[in-house]
Amino acid sequence: MPITINGSPTPVPDDPRVSLLDLLREHLHLSGAKKGCNQGACGACTVLVDGHERILSCLALAVQYEGRSITSIEGLGANGALHPLQQKFVDHDGFQCGYCTPGQICSAVGMAAELKRGVPSNVTADFAAEVIALTPDELRERMSGNLCRCGAYNGIVAAIGEEYAEVAR
Amino acid sequence: MTPFTFARAADAAQAVALGAHPQARYLGGGTNLVDLMRETIEKPASLVDVSGLSSTIEERDDGSLLIGAAARNTAVAEHRAVRTRFPVLSRAIVAGASAQIRNMATVGGNLLQRTRCNYFYDDEGSRCNKRTPGQGCDAVDGFNRIHAILGASPACVATHPSDLCVALAALGAIVHLQGTTGTRTLPLTDLHRLPEDHPERDTMLAPGELITAIALPALDFAAQSTYRKVRDRASYAFALVSVAAALDIEDGTIRDVRLALGGVAHKPWRAWRAEELLKGQPANTDAFMAAADAELHDAKPLRDNGFKIDLAKRTLVAVLGSLTQQATKGASA
Image (tube, rainbow over the protein chains, first blue to last red):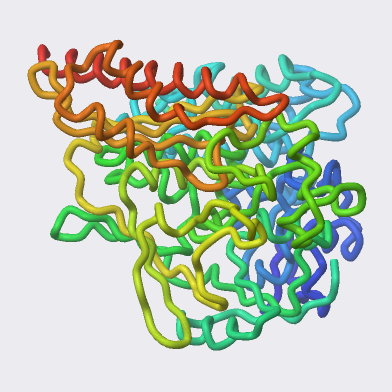
């Protein structure tokens, strides 16, 4: 069974050592997801599984995702248009060098899905609550797996906060 | 990464048959194992993917919870029964790693993650008895700020990195195992071991044995439980010290209590001594401090980590204080 990447079926690599990130970057030349640390510390390689679940493609062996659907930043916008969150990153200067941006954006899409399901975070006060508001503290905690060495965090938080202000209401 | 073969197990029986090879390793989410393979610290000849095995979270009639070992950390943390009846477990999980890693990581894999000791990871530059038995330990006299204060040995001062396991230790979780000769159960507190002369062995698992599930026995007062993690940054860092606690108070007296510490030892550290001292005592700061002092009485600081002894005591006292406050508020409401 192939892996579906941004809608296109892709054969599983013969060598099980190939990471999902290397499959994207080296085999398919989709260079959006970045190899920042290659050890799960920076979040620059974040992609989405089945449209909404954010994972680190550097720590994933491609073979583990056989039969699943992967969305990288290249597959997020529809028909050549920017995804609404991509536009918000532009509007709010959510980057300087842009290296972490694909991971930030994929991560935020997954974050919104988690919030919608009511997944608690380390700063959630009431774990019995069904609905959790996306406060700045919640947003920063939930995005803590994505580092930005330019320090564009204020713009990143503004972009994500504006796009998903309504998610948990 | 050294070459390996890959096989996906359809069920636990097939997994243990495939896993019986001495150079085989089980693969869950891969968040630790893949990293260690890339660093060539782990060099399995074959990987048996067990991430497709049971991931159900079953609420059983006796009040216990049975969590399939392939359940992802996020799935456990967000489960309503866990959040309301065993909040310490939800809180411990979301205190660990990042959301992406929690989405990938399995519960079984979390139990078996290796230490984050820098010397263990430094394959080319450092000696490590856990990585290469008999080689020596560069952490004992090295930069050992993050290392163990309890239960360490001259051979190894590494700590167990899991948050989830600290909560499981406090909750008295039972680990379900399957091997080629049958199944057995083990209390979580007996799964991991102290390093002694064999730090290369993290656990009491037999070769090829597979974790299939984790059971949380019914524990009414676990609804009043919490987890506090102290670390070098506010998020996405391993614990310097952490405390999992559940407290049962009646009329200001401690009826029952569960306590475990993380970041302090080679295994999740159930604070049996403190628990025994606290039962029947008034729920006040003096009693909490006496229990914390007793639990840390045998703590031995290394060059850089003496601060952990006071930090562990203060965190224990603070967590018990906050649970007491919650209980008092709940009782008067």
